[in-house]
Length: 86
Image (cartoon, rainbow, N blue to C red; front, side, top):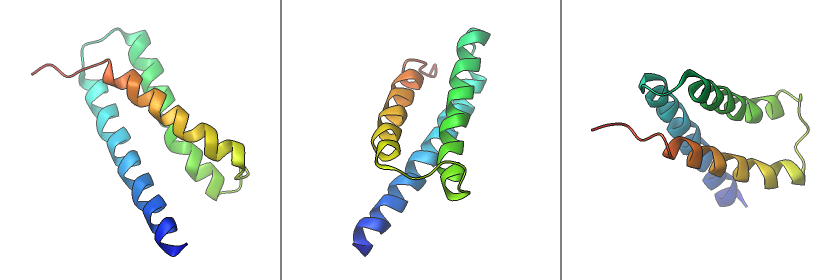
């Protein structure tokens, strides 16, 4: 169980780091402001979700743990569409 918990923490750290990195890249890209705003707001909300769980704003539930990975993957797909120019 301890190994599973450690792997979950490592996964969350990697995902949060990647999200922050991609959000900075998207902020620098010359894309329409409306799309950029949606991406940045969605990214900030996804970054705040785990912290709100730790601060007891959102109760950890089975639904949260099922929806959050789907939301992360959809967000990664959204920012994958905005590719940095070489």
